Image 1 (cartoon, one colour):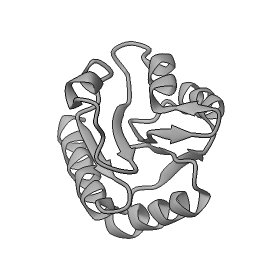
Image 2 (spheres, one colour):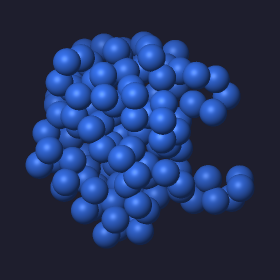
Image 3 (tube, rainbow, N blue to C red):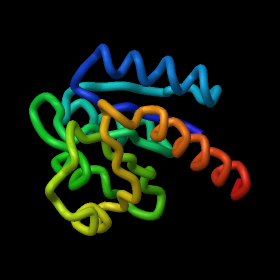
Length: 125
């Protein structure tokens, strides 16, 4: 399973990569902090899962989501937010987002969710 991380903070990206590799054994196939470069990388790499921060350089998660919906093979997206978001979770469902995590408080939960996604992916392939 291919994982891509889109997060503005390089320090947090490196922390996530380390946690994911250590706790799940999954490799991270790409990372980016810029919205435009994230869109290009996702189109090129075609990851199975994208961990997407709400705020990126030169744009937001919604900018990315509007540009990566490409059909049946859309990646599963896990949204990272800085704080509890005021926007209804149903707003994100139209973009296929099923899980939202607070990046300051819920990184371990995010990794556990990623582990579950991988287990489901292995069962289906």
